[in-house]
Length: 261
Image: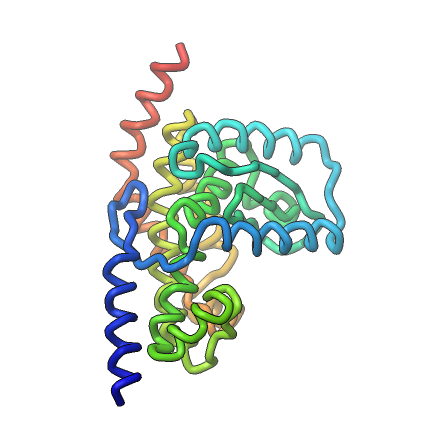
């Protein structure tokens, strides 16, 4: 009992001393992970992906991605000052994109071929959203929160190998799903501001999400296509959030255009 009380007290102390602030939203979050540890893990994962998945050489897709990457990375410099940026288009039919801590960004050709992305501005909306997950340290937070839910065992895990070596307990799935839902909405809010500051019209984010809503149909249809352990908000719900942020994003976009001339 005494050891358990010490473990809980240590966990509480760590929790209160390990908070950081999310860019744009200002939300306070739990972060028990070091950037170095997370970047090391994701860098290995990205190299494995490049070795296993074919890389597209399509000139239009690659030119758009490099242009978007250059402009967005300049806007997030202070949120990711040590990033070693790398932008890759993967030959994959999935409508998907991702960004990893350390500045590794991947876009699947399915986004283009399915008509979700038809312009550089629409690609900027997608990439900004994915990079927002990184600057908001959602990976750090997810690992940290999983560790806290494991309570006393967290102290042992941290001492013996770091949170990165933890195997998540399946019983945590419902909790993690709710966090995923909130993180998607937060990344939408941050991402639309990043693209606006980079000089991309934020209305493109609205257009992309409208096409996603059309593609996935009703809530029931959408849920049937998703991983049951992940609860992303339906595109129509995300549209509501983007519209709520649009006025502020348009103001940032107008300022960015003034600075370009």
